[in-house]
Length: 314
Image 1 (cartoon, one colour):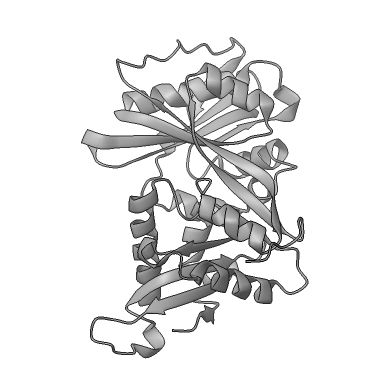
Image 2: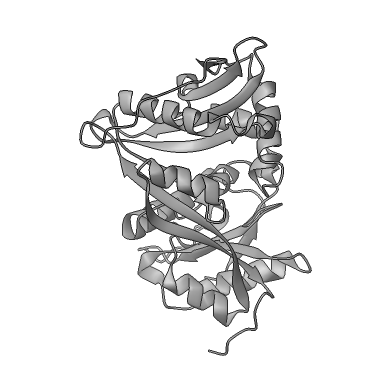
């Protein structure tokens, strides 16, 4: 079936893409699509373009406007930031990656096109080279165990700092302001709006007790935060260092390490058996901190930019 380009997905189409994501995650490990792309599946106001390639159903029927019963190829061009594409593990090495990439390039037009490849896939790297893309950014995925066999360092909070949990209805704007200051030069994180925050606090995994705030003990000003995430059944719960933000004006006081450790202790107490995080490979200070806290490198996501290299003939 030829690719279809949509700006809004039906419930059936969302379910088909999510099923594709689940199949890829089981085969490859990791996260085949970013959180922002997964949220955009159900949010037409995100302004994303969706490219779907379907496979024939068992009965050979064409399911019309609701889309094919099975999606074997998917790509997303967001309104800003890097695009993503995904091919069903059972349908790889058949040209679908190139088909999706060509459709993204057509949609992008004169816009500078960047595409994420998750997990350091050799196939994605080869496709990028063939189409004239070169790596321009690396996001490391790191992981460590929790529990008695992997004890955490003790938590130390400066005397002039108080640690408390996020309060819904009170702290939203202060957190957004801190996030904007901390990630002023970040291409995605620093642009979060109230709608972006609301979408995530509405997710089933959100727990305000896991969004820890470090505030000035005298003035109450927000200095740093660590937003943690915990998902999965109690017997196999996994945690994530979701967002760590430190006000640039408060750097040099050890607040980054303090809030990271506070979040890790929270996840440990919540019964998480492991914790993961993503960190920019060129953020040397953050990489050192996480290495010292026992986070080993698991994989890397690579952002490729079109036109950064010469295409390679097949």
